[in-house]
Image (cartoon, helix red, strand yellow):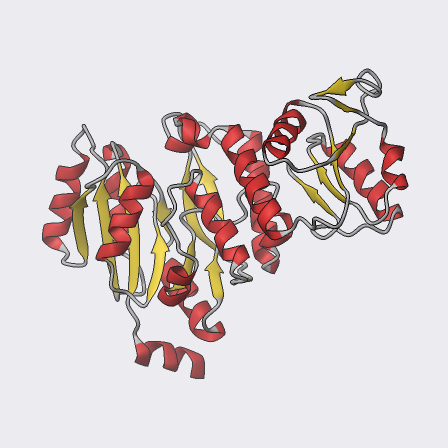
Length: 343
């Protein structure tokens, strides 16, 4: 009760940054969910990224009725430049993002703000999410939702940051000072949501556990993350390798790549591009003993010959991952220190 009193008395402003492009069919639901928030001291900086449908006109009608909605046109091009411009117009104590095709639950801002007011700076508030789609979501999205929410339940999101984006792009909130310190949205690096998650990790912003569903995440065929080249698999792998080398790679230790499928080969090329020496192992007997990119592949037992190695695993099969974890555990190797799953 004392904490709620402090929150109400301080009444900080929340800046919501939202890019949009041709989301006319979903914007009304999105905007109504923001207007209906239980916490009311917010500003919405919403930026049109050159829409060709009636999206801009629709948002302008909402803006006429609610002065908290501040509508702009992107002076640049693309989601990142729209986000950058929105942030430049913001003045709130706290920063969060919303996607123009999604829906906030009515207590979303209140719950995340309370978390940050309680824990203070150098924290990121997150919430659980639910995917929805006309006709139902795919098994892949259902699995991602469960995985992400399990991490959020305990605030252990960074523990699997090299697998997938561990902080949903439209369901986080940070103090303005922390956002600036992380240089959020400043680099033009796609996928921008995953890059921002790595920036939070890099600057040691602790994830606050959350057991509540706060955001409804819409999936549909034309969604940008499904269609744009910026969100292709290779961009994710390039980002993972970049941050691994910057944040977790220890040059004094031998690096071992496990897996020689499509992802393994991509990671191998990225490491070679950076002139990073590595050894390569796999479980496919057809590939063991053969050279790929001038490196001869060894079987998994080869890992035992190294003193204090680090290992990148690109094997996606869940059963094989379980077997690999058992082998690594037998070698007393620890997750996110000695080995890192990249899928």
